Image (cartoon, rainbow, N blue to C red; front, side, top):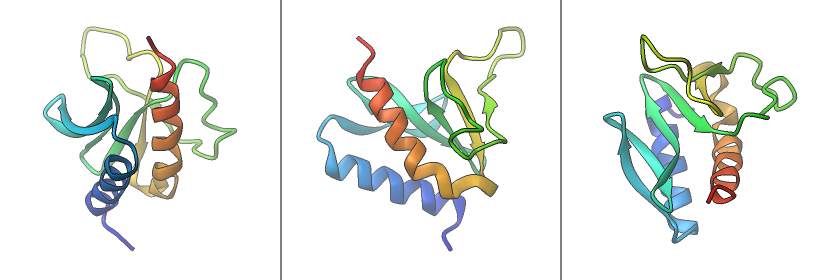
Length: 107
């Protein structure tokens, strides 16, 4: 089984290889994936963050421990972004696909 970091890079390399619109980048000083200059996923401290949209249902998608991304102490969580910890990393690949699909709908 891959470490969380190895899992992230395997996903990142897969997505950048199969979709010419997907590129590596840095989101909040962490490695991330972007499409059309919009980030849809990133890796930070053995967890991944995904832009899944405000209507994402974590329970229905099999990641009951998803948490809203809240990187700022004095601001509310980022809408539509969720953090998935390493104990649910089996879902990271599927969530990256959903995040990419969602991001491609944003103008």
